[in-house]
Amino acid sequence: MSNRSVTVSWSATTLPGGAAVAGYVVRRYSSTGTVQTIGAGCAGTVTAASCTETDLPAGSWRYSVEPKQGNWTGPESGQSTAVSVAAPGLTLAPASVTSLPATLSGSLASFKPGQTVTVRLDDASSGTVLTSTVAPATIPSSGSATVSATLPVGVSNGSHTIYAVGSAGDVASAPVAVSSTTTITTSAWSLRDVSTTTLVDESAPSAFSGDGRVTTTGNWAPTFAATRYVDFDLSTALPAGKAVSGATFDYRRAASATSDTNCFYFEVRRISTGAVLAAHGSAASPVGCVTGTAQTGSSIALPELTTTDLVDDARIRVYASSSGSRGTNVDVATLSGTAGSTPFTLYATQHADAAAGGAATAFPWSQAALDGTPLDAGGNWSNTFQTSRYLQVTFPAYVPSGATVSSATLRHAYRPAAAGNTACWYAEAYSGGSLIATYGSSATPVGCNSSATTYTTDSLPLPEVNTAARANDLTIRLYFRGSANGNGRRTQHDLTDLTIAYAD
Image (cartoon, rainbow, N blue to C red; front, side, top):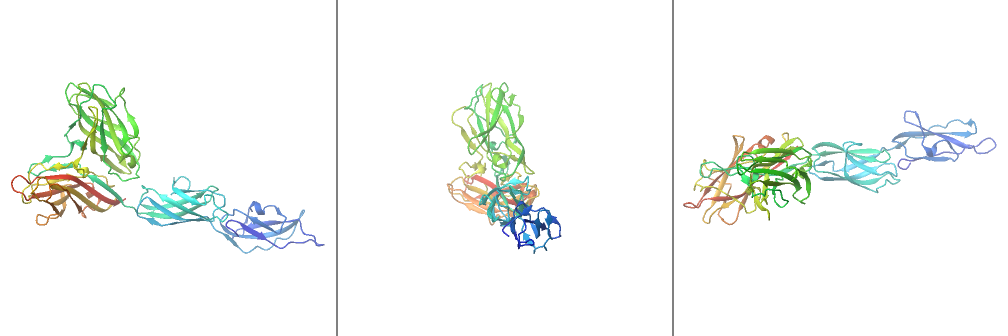
């Protein structure tokens, strides 16, 4: 036997007088004694004293032979010893993966020669075709080949089956368990400054979070122009490889004078390449117009954004016109939808304003990156910690409700605003309105920085943020004090973000 082929041989039968019979009839039986349809190599009358049956199905088989001469058939021989033919096999390792993408490697065995092989996930006929390599690409006579296949980002945690599907119908499978951890990082979008004991909303206008704090663009022309636009770069906070449904651009704006009419259309672009994915409206057919200073909202479906990879690379370029050659007061510019089963709303990490033509001016959200565009705390801190003086930051919700959170870490970059001051801080974490943990204290701060020219970036593990509910409803209060005398105790803050690792 060789792979899926079995060679049957027997002693020749002679007729009285010594002449050999004309041929033989070969039969194959299952292990239960049921006669089978025999393959072409041994079908009909075999004139030699052996034959080879190819492409056998898996199973245990026995053979018999009958001599045949014209219309005469001699007695059937006894059945041979059993011959076992193995089923097509697939082995892959590792059997479990904890991060994606992951490449599994292994081998094929007992495949029919001459086939090409496709590797699919979870369904042999309709499952996702995986990127794979089979060597040799065409199965050789041995029926064996090496194989590798890559599980992409986005495969759900749990038990899966990988199928190797031959072009001639052979199918083999191997199990794999996925238990991957997703890590996301998101900026604080809502920031409240209580450094003077009076709360001041310092949420950056570039976040356009619908809090009534508008940003006025540069002055538009009365007619649309390709060189006059405002770009909104959305945050890259979603896990990779997820399907997205219901993507929507929400744009709330008003003209900056009661007599003005402002109209707009927009493009969805990729930040990484600048490629235009879709245009919504045009100069001849704007998406919407607004007259006067009352805020008006528009929600426009973005069917072109089908994955989180596209959403995380999305730039909205808005073109506008103003009958009075004035700017637009923008209160909301967000991108929302559902990733997998998790709703999301993304805010702009920066907007770039070219409304007046010429080079665009970038306005980054200070807490999204350590980029030298800090938030200045509005007041002088006390030289001792005060529970009535703090910065309060709130993070958006992107963790699936059923996820298991394995870690959460806050990063904060800060420095004194003036030389001669040492700024120190500790923190409290709240889930909703409930205090869940205090990190550091007035006696033992989390960190201090005495340099007015260099930011200190402190990383603070938050072990109490251990559920999706807490991760999705997290507020941090940062309590500061300064060491300087007089009015030199102000601080600058250039980064506040939250990194969460979870499995779903």
